[in-house]
Length: 356
Ligand SMILES: Cc1ncc(COP(=O)(O)O)c(C=O)c1O
Image (cartoon, rainbow, N blue to C red; front, side):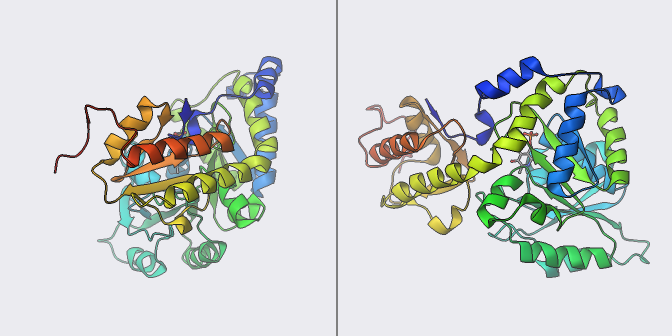
């Protein structure tokens, strides 16, 4: 099976499993887990933030971070393509009473600065819900893993600082962004007030994310984490894998990016595939079909029958490279997709093919 559905599907490496078995643990609700304490300290140092806190998922990281910035009735300014808006069950509104103020997202994953400026309402106006936080995402999932540039982030942060509005980064894949930009991850984290990043995506850990930011903010996240049931006990058993993910895995992410490019180049050469190579900047490839009777769903199904797993995505198809797929896997996947779109790889029954 070549599983290109997401970089969340990776299994822990042998070194991670060994570290998990040997992990020193304690009750983390008492702050007593030495492995988690170390993980939080290393994360804060790498990101150049005062403090960091371990949470079980990226969704909980974003939820607690946004609510630590934003009181009930305040606005969360975020993009219409953002993960927080699309895929986190509206938790910020449902649980925290904050209001989503949705802004357009460019294909580069940015919120246009003039749209942000127009969205922050004047503080003196009693009709208006005040801005509580601005959220960015880097790399940007629904924009196809594109990297949001430092210059843009710095401009937004400068503008937001003047108005005392914090900026939160959903950095689920921020290490992929850092590799693509060729900068240390803290150069990205420096452009935001707070950041959430995932250990369990490209970095390959089985579980977990961290939120990092100012110490007083992390204290508020700590309380919110408890409130939503994210206070865990001897959680160093998973934190031990996270420490390996954080310290050893960023160095190999360029392989995932090279594999994505390899796959993308082979796909882009096919007349039935609509794929802009400039959009393939990290480990995510999103492509459409043209001059083909296949729907994205039919292609995904036909590929699954040949042990290549993809997902339909925004009327197109998504493939994501990661620790558990090799360059050879990407070549095989490209060959199988090529056979399918050229008509030789679809079952005789033609199931799922669009009826013209
Ligand atoms: C950009 C982004 N943010 C947040 C998350 C949420 O992470 P989790 O699945 O750990 O809740 C994801 C997961 O795919 C993501 O892609």
